Amino acid sequence: MITLGAIKAATGHEAVTRYLEEVVLPGSDWNLVKVRRRTVRLEPPHAYWASYVVKLGRGELVYPEPDAEPVLEEAAVPLAVEDAPAGDVSTAIEEADAELPQPSWTEERELRLIARGVFDPEHWSSYREKVGKALGGLGSDPMSGPARPALFDDTQHAIWFFPADPNLTSLHRAADPVEMLRLFRNHAPEVLEHPGRITEVKVELARYLPEIAAILRYDLETDPETSARTIYGKVQPFNRGAESHRVMTEIWKAAERSDGKLVVPRPLGYHPELGLYLQSSVAGKPISSDRTKPEFLPGVTHAAEALATLHESAIPTQKKLPLDREVSRLARTLDQFALVEPRAYFLLRELIAHLKDKLKGLPEEDWLPTHGDYKYDQLLHEDGNFSLIDFDFFALAENSFDLGKFCAYLVPSMPKSWEQSVAAEEGRKAFLNRYRELRPQASLQRFPIYETVNLAGRAMTLMWTQMRGWEQAAEALLVIGMERLKSRLP
Image 1 (cartoon, one colour):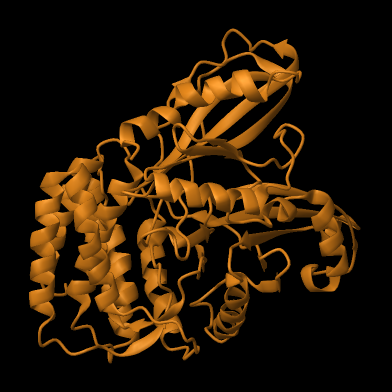
Image 2 (cartoon, rainbow, N blue to C red):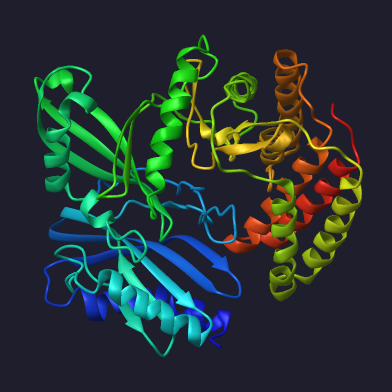
């Protein structure tokens, strides 16, 4: 069994930099400019992932002006997607620091490098075989195109570069501008709002959770230019995109009947040969985690209106999200907490006992169409208008499933000031009050349980992501969960 320390060393910044300098770059005319760790993900006792942004340059060096301002690098964007390992997985975000301007090259490019470690030797053996079958036919040079992963038996880890992916085996094709140009030309009437000829497709990685899902942005250039548009595509394994397309088609119809309460991207098709679901872009940017921003309170109020519309939509689906599965998932996490944070382990153990006790005698709520991953950052805003995205977890669930998750994620895990916590509480009250105005018949007797389960789930996610200060943040969320379990609706 490989230790966590050994895995972290093998996939750490120093090891990755050495691999780039000694294996990848020799023989090319590219220079290594910077290696920045973007995310980590821990799934004890099975696997550990680290992703890096690799900046390269060639040509001539261009020096900045003497009085140039420091630059703050763009933060990473978290992604939660369906069937992530062990449940609701987010990515750990490294803190960005302001840097003094550095010389730049006349030509620069960025690569996304993924390092995945496996703890158990038997799991490593099966994973190694899987990777060979999935990507063994690719080339060996990541500088010239999609390349098969490099495998290191001594340290039981693999390294690969986007768009190669051991589980998303069609991702490199969906990220190929030439192949996507052919696809979009063949489906131009479906994807263009106005008649035109597609002349070029630019592909940009929007979000990526290795081996789980990738979201790609496609900018379609056309003749005439007025037909140009932006489209988003999601690559998922196991034909999940087919269900995404069916569900989004029904949600789109419900949104058209909602008088503006529910605004969603328009589905544009599913292409099974690529595992690629396509949808239109929607205007705006995600609501900020700064709860004091002016758009936050209107956003959570709109979220209540959108959710009430979705809950009344009667959209059919076979997938269900039962509460006992959520509680069981927390119970399975106990052993993981025992391995890495004993204090949180005891808090979670006590919380689970109280959850099970409170559940006794509480009747089920109404089962309704459910977003399944309802959080404030699933809302995009622009000029006072809001749109809802990311229906990957759509299913049937009890009435309080979405409400409990939304309210649990309003709580800041690491508040920078008391104002953040106050604004979060105001948002929680506004959200619940508006929802109950629209659906006074809602059955919410299990709401405290769902909110508590999701607060505990956030603590669990913090453990997986290993972000700085996660231990204290996880303990705080578990304590708040205990308080919410014993309280009533505001």
